[in-house]
Length: 143
Image (cartoon, rainbow, N blue to C red; front, side, top):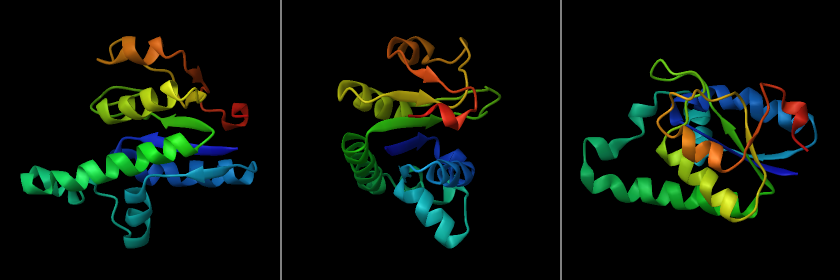
């Protein structure tokens, strides 16, 4: 199965062992291109890659990254959301990941979420409305 991992850029370092574990289970795994770049360079500070905040003329880079990963979601067999703690919220899912989930959902891809989400999550209603399967940290459930 080709699994496309979606997560906050803040979690890109943590998705690498998840990618390896899924590959060991026999899956093909796609991670965001920025996560690959971070790994190659050895710099996992998300803010160093988000140049559009300091230079709004760079938002075209964000657009290209979004389009590229949405294309991967379309080509994949399933979406795995890696949702760790961020901003004091366990199981964090932000707006961009919600968009990726929604894209997978509209293309009838199974949606897996690594950890439960808090009802306090601002996007809780939308996440739950897509009926994802929560793995509770167990990657062997992905089939």
